[in-house]
Amino acid sequence: MRRIMFALLVSILTAVVPLSSPAGATITIKPPKVIVAVLPEPVVATPLRHALVVAASSVRLNIDELRHEWQRVAVCEVSGDWDMVGPVYSGIGFANGTWSQFGGHRYAPLAGEASRDQQILIGMRVTHGQVPDQGGCSPYGW
Image (cartoon, rainbow, N blue to C red; front, side, top):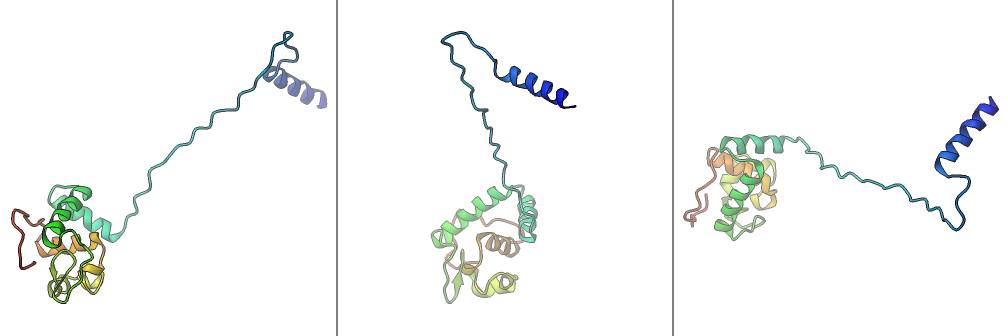
């Protein structure tokens, strides 16, 4: 058994490194190439993400397009300040009472304290599944 193992080892080594080389020749062994695969981050399925997918599909958009459309609303209503908090209006122009009335209080007391996705979801409820037309900004909020 030892002879078989030794013979196997010798045959492997002679295939990798020749035992003799021509005079003056140098043998260089290159390290193997390392290939690193970058995998995309997994999409975490949360109730909020699911609700956004449903809301986006109702207006034939994907989530990124829906976020872009609501960013236009934020720019129009509050100069893009999603975190705005005031005594009457907050977030992207929600009247504080409207925020609570449509279930926003389950995410945060005021819209400006909620995430963008949470504001979008409540905004879709307020507008009955539509993104507000930003042809003209409403000075009264919504």
